[in-house]
Length: 111
Image (cartoon, rainbow, N blue to C red; front, top):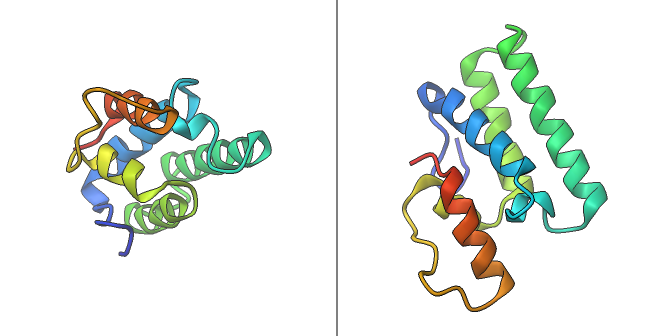
C-alpha cells in the first residue's frame, strides 16, 4: 500500500478516528484541505462515507485501509502525513500559518 508510509489494516480504526477528528478541528490544516472550503467539505464527506462503509461491514479492513490510503494521498500533504504518523515533529516555534497548523495537527497523530 503506498501512502508515504502505508496504513496497516490493524491500525485502521485509529486512523479513521484521528483523521475524522482532525478534519473537524477548525485549527487544523485538514479543515481547509489545500483548495478551499468546497474541497474540504468533499474530503470530510468522503472520509465519513469511508468510515461508515467500514463500520457497517460493507468494506473489509484491508479494502478500507487501501481506500483510506488513497484518501490520504489525495488530501494530505507530505508534512501533514509525517506529523500524523509521529515521525516528524511539528515546529516548536511556529513561524508561519502552515507551521502553526502542523502544530495543531500533532494533537491528532496516530503514531
